[in-house]
Length: 217
Image 1 (cartoon, helix red, strand yellow):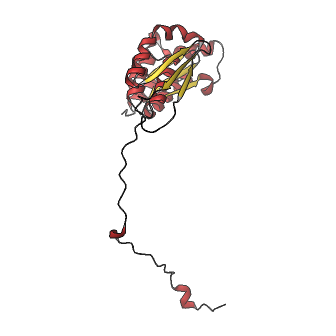
Image 2 (cartoon, rainbow, N blue to C red):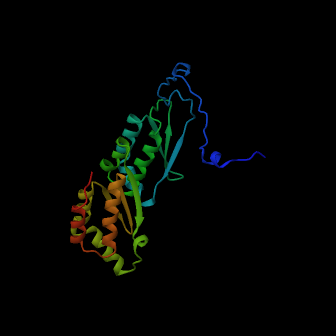
């Protein structure tokens, strides 16, 4: 084994880096954007289950849901009465790769209780999401305490809910003990924090003042 002197230890290791000239590099390939019609992908499905209490609203608003999905996104949609699910299918004319998931989110948002004019924003914008949680996830309440909590979230004639919606640029659905929020990621977080403070017992005035101090984009 060769001896290593003290001077050799102080010398840093030097690696030989190969020099690549720009003239020797191959040209970058130029690919056209992928089109769903030319991608050769098989037909895809999405099935959205329909709760029992949302069958009548779905039947009433069917054409308002059917038109943007079939005409704008070029998808097929039908209601399967046996399985009680809305079935969405891509076609050969479907152009957008994420159209199927957008349509499923749109239908799901409507079935959660959002109005069509609010839920249709999921088809037009990319950075919108739906988040849901239950009151018991924040605080365990039963009986009259739970009823008063739901009343605090809504406010008189829905005033508290509308104020939080307008301040955070979101839409909120109070479905018994479940809460659903539609909006951008940042705005959902602000609205969720405000609702959680109300659940924990904060007075609405304190929640409003905190909302005014938070900048909303």
